[in-house]
Picture (cartoon, rainbow, N blue to C red):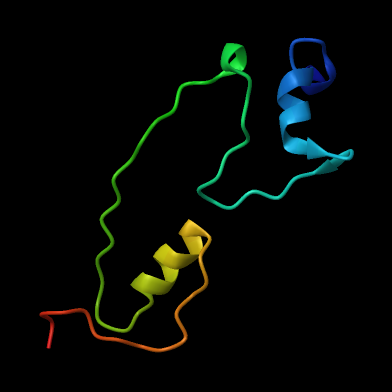
Length: 79
């Protein structure tokens, strides 16, 4: 349970702390680690499907950490 406070875990803890407070990361962000501590990075491809107007664009914008669009624009070719 106390692995982050042990000598091997301390560099990982330091990468998520700033002035002894936890840094806030977006859903698609990650802390930067020294090359010797780098962990494997896995990429995914997401397919978002749903009816018109249910919030697919807002969901993707939120996951990407960008502002949610306030106006609605139809996707090209769907009218």
